[in-house]
Image (cartoon, rainbow, N blue to C red; front, side, top):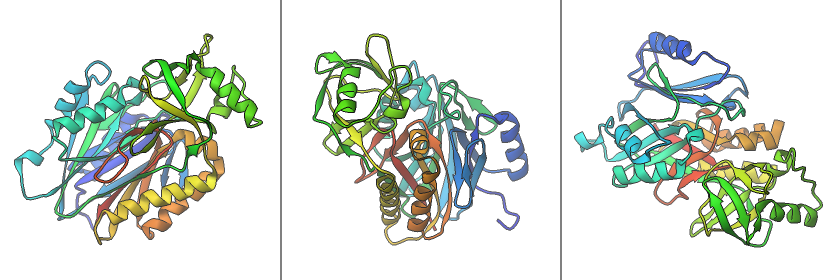
Length: 360
């Protein structure tokens, strides 16, 4: 940046790092106007990718202004956390910037991420678009952090407000399709799926495994679940949820909440479908720039996607980079993805590609 201070820095870092020391070093070295980010479960740029890394994007613009804000107590009160976060935004003070968006990173282990996005939408009266995801911890699912300035926090949500004279592009897409008949959620407690069609939830997965010549081990079901996730029917398409474990009573614990009474399917995909979906999400984000060229982009996809694809996850990153035309790319694998934008499939997702493109 030719010696100029960045207006904002976004950083994603493995749980292996001393996050406090990292943030202080970034703050002292870069002296950004705003500094946000989160712990992560896989990190990448257009040139490098892997796990146990840290990556950062610095932004400076004459057409955008940024503000960093933190909301706490997500697990207990999403409405209060959303109001606290939005209180740090500056959009209400200015009509100079017609396009309003925010990068949102939340402690997904605190739960209720779907409700949090709804609360943020209501508090901002639908005037902001959102993109981001759930902080990770290298697939340990133990403790995750969000970053605001040099502060790290759990049970919290951080936002980077983006006020822009030009459109900001957000794209979201997944490459999954139904592989089973519809099933009704007959009993659920948050993300704990107790029964489908009146029977223990695991029964449906075991029937599906038998019908498709797959193996499922109740004591170690994740290899099966990574290839057989749940899709919740919505008017806009299927919202995905990753099953993680099985309880003794046959209940299945998922990565995010599932609505009671919802119709769901067991879903399937392929490596080619995942890459095509990521490319489609990127193309949607670029189109939302309305003829503009992306100056940089943030990309989020699920840790489950990386675990499922292994080395082939590189092909998904290549598809995103190609669709961006070589523009600077930074991102991470998250515990769920956030997208709320006009004309896009919004909310809190699993195994879904989300792209946030900055205008030039």
